[in-house]
Every structure is written in C-alpha cells, then in structure tokens.
Amino acid sequence: MHTKLGDRSAREQFLRERVEAVYATLTHGLTRFVRVEDLVHAAADAFPGLVPTRAQLAAEAALPLKEKQGLEIDQSLLLAHILGHPRCGTHLCHAMLLPRPETAAALAALDAQGFVDLGPVRVERHGRAAHLLSSNARYLNAEDQGTIDAMEIGVDVATLDPGTEIAVLRGQVVQNAKYAGRRIFGSGINLTHLYYGTIPFLWYIQRELGFVHKYFRGVATPDVLPDDVNGAGVEKPWIAAVEGFAIGGHCQILLTMDYVLAAENAFMTLPARKEGIIPGAANLRLPRFTGDRLARQLIQAERRLQCDSAEGRLICDEIVPGGDMDAAIDRTVTMLTSAGAVGAIGNRRAFRVGVEPLDVFRRYCAVYAREQALCHFSPALIQNLEQNWGAGGRSRG
Image (tube, rainbow, N blue to C red):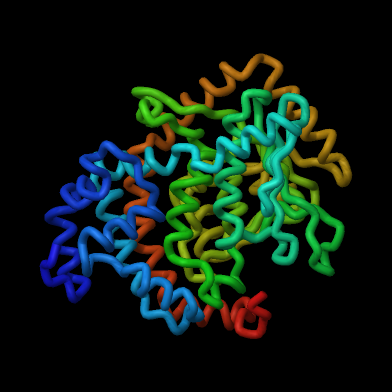
C-alpha cells in the first residue's frame, strides 16, 4: 500500500474502510494466528506508513518516555480497529490465548524435574497444585518488560501441566529493605521503568490479551474457538495468595482468580488516578465484585482497601492469620479439588459466559487499546510519575 498516510486522521479513515482486508493480508486470510507483537511489525512491512517500522521503534526505545514522539499510538489505532471488528478481533483474541512456542520445552522441564525456572517466574509441582511463583525482587515483584514473556510461559505451563489439577499464584520473597525477607504478591507496573521508557505501549496489550486473559479463560487450542459457547480451551481453577499487598496490575489479576487468600495485614489499591493510565481490564471486571460506586472510588479516587475489611472481602475469599499462608493454600487446594477438576472447570465456564463472554472482552479491549495509548504518551503521565511517585529521582536500574 502506497496510499498517502502521512497523518493520523488518514490512517484512521483507511482502517475504518479496510481493516478486514488489512487483517486478512496479515494473517493469510485468517488462516494463521499472529500475536500482537508480530502483527504490528507485519503491518509495517505490508502497509508502509500505517504503523512505525522496526527502525523507528528502535530509535524511540532508547528514549525516556517524556522524549518519545508517540509513534506507537498508530499501533494502538491498528489494534483498536482490529479488535473492534467482530471476526478479526475474535481471531486475534484466539491467537493470544494459544500457548507460546517456548511452552513445550518448559513443560518438558517441569515434567522431568518437578519445577521449571524461567527467571522472573518459577513453576513448581506441589501435590495436586502447580505453584506459579513470580519474582522481581528489586522492584517489589513489579511487572515490566523483563517479566512479561516469562509470566505468560509460566501461566501456560501451570495451566497445561497434566500432573496437576489446580494452580496457585504467589509472590516470592523480595529484597527491598522495608520488606526484606517477606513475600509480596506484587506492586503492579514498574513505574521506574515506565518513566524511563523501557515499557512500550504494546506491553499493555500483550499483557491483557495474553497471560491475564489466560488466567481468566484458559489456554486455547488452534482448532476450537475459545468463546465458551462453541468450545473451550484447557483451564484450571486458580488460587491467589496475597501477602503484603496487591497494587495496580496485581490487584487487577485478583479479579481473574477463582479463590483469593489474603494475609490479615495485606491491602489492595488501584492507583490509576495517581498514575494516569487505565488499570487493565479492572474497569470491566471490578464492578462485578464491588458495585459501580466503590469501583469508581478505587480507580478514580485511589481508595485503599484492607483485605480484612467488609469491602476487601468482596474481592478476597478468606483472610489468613500471620504465618498460616502455606497451610491455607494446602487446605484450599484440597477443598477445590476434592470433587474433581471437571466440575470446577465447568462452573468456571458457566460463570464466565454470563458475566464476560469473549465478545464483551474483545469490545472492551478495542477501547482499551486506543485509550491506553493516549494515556501512555500523555504529558500528564510524566507529571504524575514525577509528582506522585518521585520517578525522576530513582535509578533507572
């Protein structure tokens, strides 16, 4: 395509008129599944001027966020139009729910030795349960570009492991002086890395369509549409063990879990207002747990919830006294597997089809792709990171 697409409005118009043809070209008539990370590069090659090239992205990647030109906004427009199209968007969601290519080798390692170490993520077999243990010790187990691939492979492995019936998500011990020697569930997105520009826009989309969605909907197979009505993928119930805190993205993850254990002194926050970004799919999911008003207070007014409170118990199923988390996990694994995995998985799907069918998720992500890019490159985000988090005074690491 050599149509003049020198401005964003021209690209928008082109996508409104031809998004189905564009996606068909990139996926060989929807016969191939292409992940978002590869899709945007394929689009740059096939449709010059529509999205930034690899060279342009490489130049941008070296800059702190405040110095970037926002070229990735054009990626967001492409993805928003694809996700907004029922057939194309469903196909892309399906592509992102498939196991990653690295998963087969990781599964073989787990089967051979009872664990697999993926760096920021470790999966271990404990009886009937696969324990997924996340670690970013220097940054309070935050998520960033260095953790996202390993996390998705880990979710694939824990889900597909034939030797276990249920999965447990837990944070590892951190190094931070204030919390040294303690397990922390997670502190959300790595704000230092965000400020210094090492988290690209595509990270948000890869995260929501990838491992977070897999917690909620399972891992798909190529031949069956994962829409719960016409078919399903491979899935397990998930237990979250919240120790310390679940901030931002880690609070979002709790909304995909089947059972949430929380230490009695743990708390949850969704500091989206102070950051200036959209908290993943929390806007879609949180009102189901808390009601609309409390959800808005959490997202738009930075309300903090103690897990051991009336409001916190709307998200957390059980409050665990100090030091008893290991025993609580074992009890919960036994409770949720005692009647067999088939019923537990069937009930997951039955709940899901009523509250968040795939088409609702797809439409939400179409909005999310566009709006999150605008937030990511907004001057207000830089101001928020500097004023509310002191990001400018922190080491890049």
